Amino acid sequence: MRTRTSHSHELKLLLVCLFASLVLIFIVRSTLTTSQEHQTPEETRPKGCAGACDKLPRSLSQALIHYSTSVITPQQTLKEIVVSSRVLEKKSPCNFLVFGLGHDSLMWSSLNYGGRTVFLEEDEAWIKQIKKRFPMLESYHVTYDSKVNQAENLIEVGKGPECTAIGDPRYSMCQLALKGLPAEIYETSWDLIMVDAPTGYYDEAPGRMTAIYTAGMMARNRKRAGETDVFVHDVNREVEDKFSKAFLCEGYMKKQEGRLRHFVIPSYRDETESNRPFCP
Image (cartoon, rainbow, N blue to C red):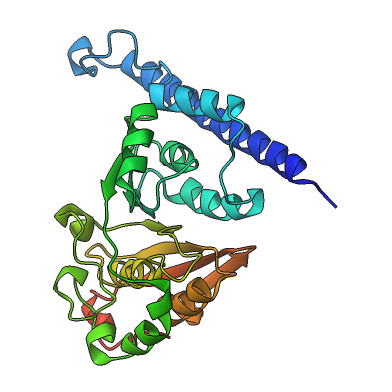
C-alpha cells in the first residue's frame, strides 16, 4: 500500500513535468515566431519585444519554482488532476472558471497559459494571503447564503420550473442561482468550470449546492456555440454526489476518477436546441 508521502512525491513530479512541458512548448513557439519575424520587413515585427519575446514568462517560472520546492501539494490526486489537465491541453488558451482558491490555483492558471483563469473564493482573508504570494492570479470574493443542512430541501426546490428554465443566473427566480458575482462572470462563455469550493464538510458550511447548479446553468446559457467541461471534486460526499447528478446530469457525465467527476454540457442557446430537456 502506498504511503501519503509517496503520493505527494509522485504528484510533485507530475507538476514539475507539466510545467517543464509548458516551458518547452513556449520555447518552441517563441522560436517559430522569431524565425517568422526574421522573414518579414522590420516594420511588421511586433513592437515592444526588445529581444525578450522568447523569454520565459514570469508566471510560468514562478509556478515551476513553487511546485518544485513546496512541501504542500494540491488536494486533488495525481489521477484526478490528469483528467482536467488533459482537457486543458486540448482547449487552452481558454476561459477557465474555478470555484475555490487554494494551493492548486497557480497550477491551473499556468496550465491555461495565455487564457483567462478566474477564481471565486468565500474567504476574503485567504484571498489577500494568496494575492500577496501570487498577485497575477485573478480572484473574486463570493458570498454563499446556503448551508449544507439545507441540501435536502434545495434539491427538491431545484426540480421546479423556475430552476429548470434556462437563462442568466443573475435574473433567475431559482433559489439555487448565485446572483452576487461580478457581471463579467455571467457574461463570459466559460470553456471549463471547476467546482472545488466552497466548504462543504459540516452542516453549517455553505456547501456546493449553489456552485454546482450555477456552473451547470452557465454552461447551458453560454453565448458561444459549443460545450463546457464541468468538473466537480469531492463527489464521495452526499451533496456533491446528488447535486452533480441532478443539475449537471448523469447523461452528460463523461468520466469519474476518484473523487472527481467530469461532465460535458452543451450550450442551449442554439435555436435548433430550444426543445432540449434539462437533462438528456
